[in-house]
Image (cartoon, rainbow, N blue to C red; front, top):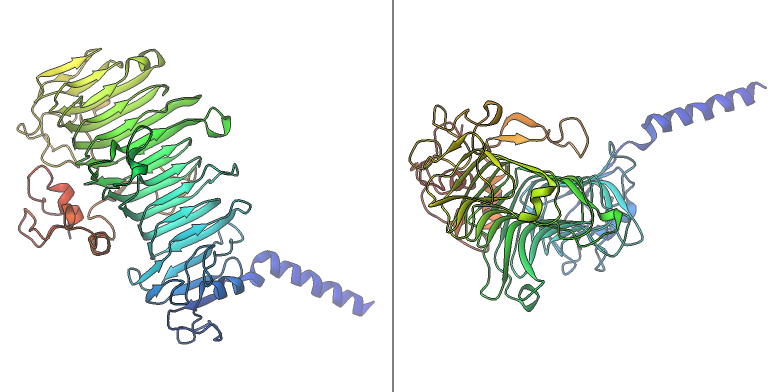
Length: 505
């Protein structure tokens, strides 16, 4: 009886240890282009060499540290992908709180050639955090949940979701990431994928120029939310996107819905503190064009579309009860703000808007507007008029708008908006608590943390400027006379005023 009692106690102790996590403590492994798969992989001086070897031996919840260098199937290290002899996909972690970690030991010094691909059609990969790595050939969260991409660059585009399975791609987080591509029609996409957060993302398109990017039905886009709901886009910048001569124009930010299937109903999507700068077509083209939408369909708050070729904001078709507020916009041609006639009966709000410079109307809206400034435009309104708080200020000369990112203190439009808010956008603070996924506390809240200087901007300039020297990639001097142009100075100095003191410590 004593032996049996002792055995029973040992079994209970083992069960308690396992349930407490003591038996599944995270193990750190190392990978290097100079490694050896015959090594133990447990120390920086005895790293493994290939992803295929490493991921086959790691448990879910372990950590893989990537040492400096380039990883590719060509050099025997592979990619984080299902394709390739030396490539493999990371194992899922046990829970969102205990994810598998794959990260660069020195962010900015690790390139994975061959891209990132997580999940398969018949397998969902979950609870994985990927950090500090730069990917060539793009990335795809193909069948996933609770994936975090942090401090990563993607040359070649990035997408969450697909159209060939119905398992969904939910609760993913893309945070402090930069994406650029040429030869691609869409640079980044959230496709049939719900409850995802894109936070502090920089996007640039360098033109496509292929037959797949021209003609009817092939619009070129910077970032799109497609057949998705409950997607939160926070502090996303789309800067200096260009088109090849044969490319079909569309917009920097876009939405679409082609599917009446209730799994892909479109709605409750939000754009918070976002900026479109120098769009070659339209800044924001919001056109969920078929099927049932979820009310409210679209929320846009503290958003900028500046120097857009054919219009700043265009809202059309089936979106219901949209909320459009605190907007700063200018266009070269077309309407600065357009809300299509068919939306008038569906309800919606348009308020706290600066609409500056236009080939047509400043505000051509089926929604009656309030608290708007339409200075610098020959024709202010079409369809409906401003109800209250109507101004004809030229914000570029009255002191209201020196920087795209804020409304100046003590200026004519400061505090003159709805409920005492400003007329125009303020994009100076971060949205969302760092690391928070959709629905978690503070995930879409306006924080008190400054958005500027932009995180990782030195690394962003090195990586995104390998392909071009235009825009923030130029070697021009800042207008404030301090050093070369940065991403931060490029955005702040876009109207022609030197970067104010205090942005950089």
